[in-house]
Amino acid sequence: GGHPVRGRVGHAFMKATMRQYRAPFGGEFSAHYYFGDAHYTDSGALLLIQVINVLRQTDQTLSQLLAPYRKYPKTPEINFVQLNK
Image (cartoon, rainbow, N blue to C red; front, side, top):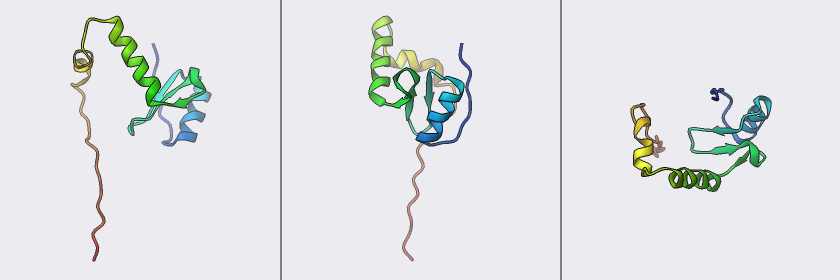
């Protein structure tokens, strides 16, 4: 029932945007996930707990749950190396 809202990247900006829209959940492409009911905390541990709870409530594996979303394109991590001249 939610709808996505774009905002600036960064911890402080993410929290401010979430407060402005009273968002229960937010995330960045950098794999940072924020939870409104935990004071907009950025926590991978809270995300893991949520995933485990969903797995407990279904008879599916994690791969099966993610399968419908794998149809969307994704960009792998891009790293830049500075070459010495």
